[in-house]
Image (tube, rainbow, N blue to C red):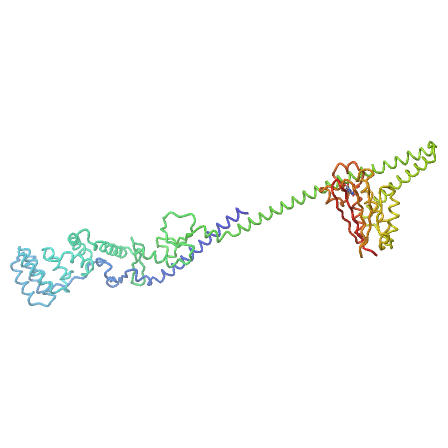
Length: 558
Ligand code: ADP
């Protein structure tokens, strides 16, 4: 049962984890479905008709190709012809200068840029620098694909005439929208200028990564990019750094303070005590994993039936012990009864045999006329009478006992004149050393004369039996209001502490040497008690070993 219980507990815990994982997956799915909520974490792209990245500062360059170039102007076209096709730079310079002075801002900026380039080509850096400084006055103008300020500052820096670090920082900050090729061209040089320790380098790396991820997405339309995840709705796409998304989803789906929810890599090694659930969005590279924060606590919550089992086991064990003890006791008692009964049979037969033998021998002697004197004959008659009295008392006892055992014993209650009855009883007992001591007047009682006689007889018989030969036995009687007490007092051997609690039990005979020598069936005192109790009275005794005993019968007066 414990084994099964443990399995059940394991299952329960596993189920609980499984449910937590499922619930978390559902919550995450709902979150992902409303991806707008992650807007603050990510960068969104509008891919039609032109790619637009918001917020712009997140990317290093504009992914998705070059930004449209400016259409060229006819006024510049002539100067370019001289400069670039014919190689006549001297002719080109004045043409450029004229446009730089007279054209609109866009044209002037374009002309200044070319002018500066021409001065450089013919080895006049001073003039070139002057032209670039002039170009700085048109920071927002575009020259071809490029921004005028970008060109001017870069060239000035190249001529050691500008703040090189500031240039790099502005480049990284995305001051001038650039396509990839141009960004890489400028950044390569500017990075060198800034030096390896510049913190802007790390920022640039992040931006380059996002730009690359966007390019990757635009080319392959893949959901899972290195370090990013793309979510599309209509023509808009949200790029979210995977780490951000992951921690936010995990935090969002953790509802239980006993179970931790994680997004585990699909290929990551799996702990043994954990449950997994896939996300509805199968393209995501994660599984929802539920692990217990404290395994012991989770188990404690689940495994309560174990204590119940153990308690039950203990209970069953205790019952078994009690049952065994009871059985053992019953068996022991039963064996004792068997022993007592067999003892009883042998002692009873013995009890019968000796008076019978005496009677037979004496009557034979008398019958054959072998007794010479009248005196002797009288003595033998008395002996025969006493032995037969003993026999009939024995038979009476046994019959009474068996009647009582069967519940057939019937009492005939009569008014008994106590003093007369006791006097008659004592004289009928026929032992010389028994004396009677009582006041002349005693109140009468209501009782069965034969039964009560037998009870007192038994006490007197025991008193004589369990005393040395000739020791005095006194039968006392006194009345105290409603109660008559009859005491049988002897100076005999007394009753040992061991026997004290048992002498009234059926078939019980004392354990000592004395009781073994004295004849008896062990039913006397049990009869006494039954008789007295049938009269509504009580019987008890005091005894001291070696000094003697007093048995008391208390009866209600009539
Ligand atoms: P029995 O006398 O036949 O053995 P009883 O029921 O009359 O059986 O007595 C039970 C036991 O009580 C006796 O075996 C004896 O050990 C003890 N007993 C009874 N009366 C006395 C007494 N007056 N003095 C000492 N022991 C006694």
